[in-house]
Length: 474
Image (cartoon, rainbow, N blue to C red; front, top):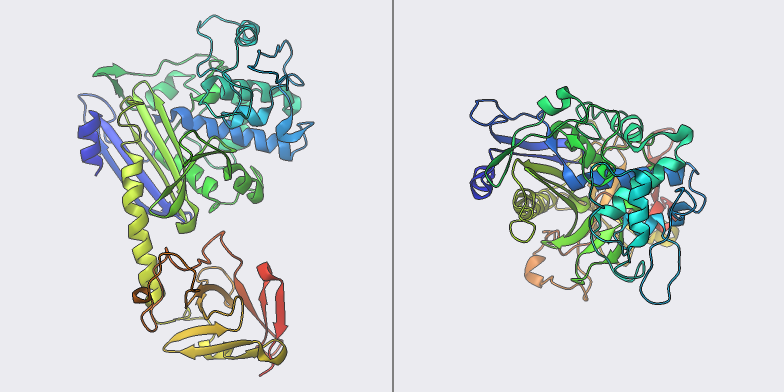
């Protein structure tokens, strides 16, 4: 598939790396890192990740919010932090000061691009923004704005302890803790430049110049980070939630950051609180970010229901109105149904506990007052009847969870109102395909736990998400 994408895009190199629940699923590298030379692309080859940089800047926003550095949290205004800021005029009667939340979600109403001129000072840039007119009052709609996220990053500098620059924050508070040792906020040295693969823009060679300075261009927070496939696989796993890094961001804040904030103009996809785009693919919610820069394109996708995280890149310029994400999305669109099929096949297999776990028969019995919950072993599968919802549930061991008595519940019989599930999909002991049953996969519903007493006998079950906790009665 990568070879076909490279041919379609005229790219000298392309790569993809996919993880499932933080573990390598597959990786593939094609082409050459140097034009007209046989230099293989590897997990340590550098790519400009372009607009994927925006998500890093949004992580900085949530970090500072969680650390109490923003007086009004996400709704802290630019004016309260940025000296010399003048509010641009908004259409209509709205006079609400511009907020950090609006900048992060492309809901600010600011124009798309930053003021041009390589020698402009920051104040000159702010003056040009102040003299402009917003496209719409903030939160009235969404319009992709590189300017908005660049302004977000430079405003956040004013809230950092000790006055850390955006560049220093990226390195010290995000990249280093995540182990992204081959990444940087922009191409600042000759060594940085040498690590990045050659790109093509309209058939012309692209090599990123280096700044030879600790500072990056003013607009860098919206799209100037470089990284490698190996580092970006760590980043994608972090965004999925498969790699917890409390020192970077609390797991609940990662989920909040990923949640949808506003529908885009198409009424189907949505912009999330981290400038990700959320969309449905094969019945699964995917959270995506496409990056496009002269000579480079990149794509990050996470699919929480399947524990899937993916990073793909190619060394050629995007056609914004044509091929778009011609590398990552075709792979994701094939991976989702394939992983669905694998999961469904696993669920249809006979129930088997890990070799070092207890026997399934240990859990058979009645629980709660009057035996309201009944656990039985039928046809090799452990079932629970009685609650929740009155439906039979298959209990699957959470292998690798570290808890031998932890289970996920899978609905064995569909409620009459379940859309898309026909009786043909529920033959005998078979489980409905994953698109039809209520999943207890990572992040969806709390698991069920059996507890044992001092003698090792099962005496209680708990369903934390439903506040159910009751003893065994028979």
